[in-house]
Image 1 (cartoon, one colour):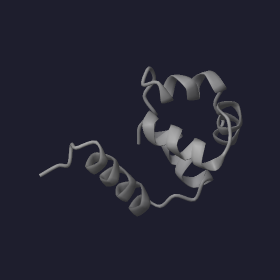
Image 2: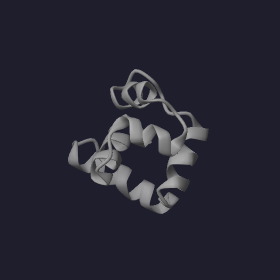
Image 3: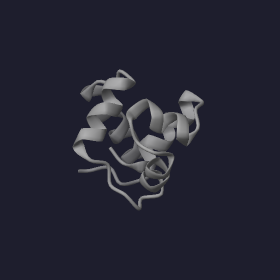
Image 4: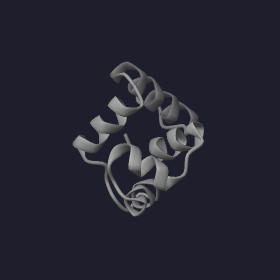
Length: 76
């Protein structure tokens, strides 16, 4: 999971950075830094995001694969 995923998820949920941060227990500033790539997502925060928004590991893998395909960096 990376900042791109967080931004896409947040935008699709129709919530702002402050609301997303409140849902997962971090500040708006942390979400901003994550989305811009200035701060990496900890495993703990990743798990909170997956749990809070009911995203399965399978769904996460599918989304990451789609991102690689769309950005032309598909693993061989």
